[in-house]
Length: 394
Image (cartoon, rainbow, N blue to C red):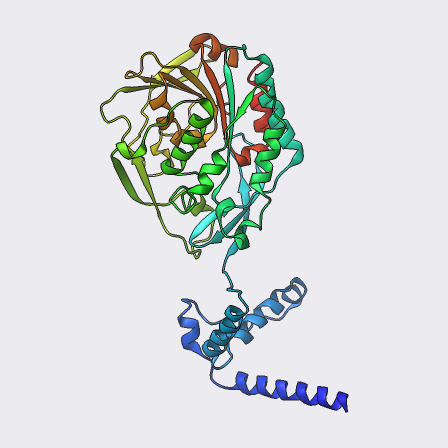
């Protein structure tokens, strides 16, 4: 009897499915999603064994069911009553190079009109990164203070359904900080960024933070350093709208993203900050070339300093009795440095990826009071960057 009931229920469901499939398709439902209806894929050995036919056929069946919009709405209602609201997203695999010449696999998540890197931690390179900073703790003269700031990315502050697709950046930062010498002052940029995660602190189409996000990193550093952060509201702002960042070119054109706006703070409104770029020649000698803090000819992240440079020397003529800070940096520092120079006499940016000299040369030339190592978290999974950072100080 039970078998008859089971068979009867199955036949009833099969009959209902055939009837619904035989009725005219709900084309308006497909049009509302701004796409064309799926068609039956070709049947051959490649499509069958690769799974392409199965996936395509399922899409064809789903699109050609009558009353599709009503069925979809009913399904959403059931999900909401269960306390679950489905999310949409797309995962894209590509390659990543942070500027060291080494390429690694990279996974991007596209959700909420935003393109985000998905972080996978690496215990081995975490130790390498900590070892590199500990080298500076060992070798720097005792009168020079040393700080470390590891910056998380925006996926860390998204809803759990997105955030949990990656490894915990908070756990990774805590792990790295726990491996550092007691001499190193660890900067909690994570905390302030988390508190302000509802603000426009990261770009939607780029992997960098905005100048507003960098302000919270700067404030966290000043809290640790013992200084006083300037008030961002004291500065006028400018905007460059319709900006499409680095990630936009790495995803397909059908991905839904919203263009960014570069909002910059007019820190050098009265031209009190002098900025000079330096590089080294084939003899290891430093030579200078002109540069600007805000490159108004650029309508992307290169608005800040034009690009990365081996050495950037910044002087605040309003703070002649201030301290000198040397920053070992990646590109995240480009938007941070304009805030830093407001609290120092000199800020010297050194990029280990493209500076060919020795760090002792920097110490001899600038006699800094403090050294700050600033990197965003993805540099901690690149062994070659960790090696460049460590070997800079021979």
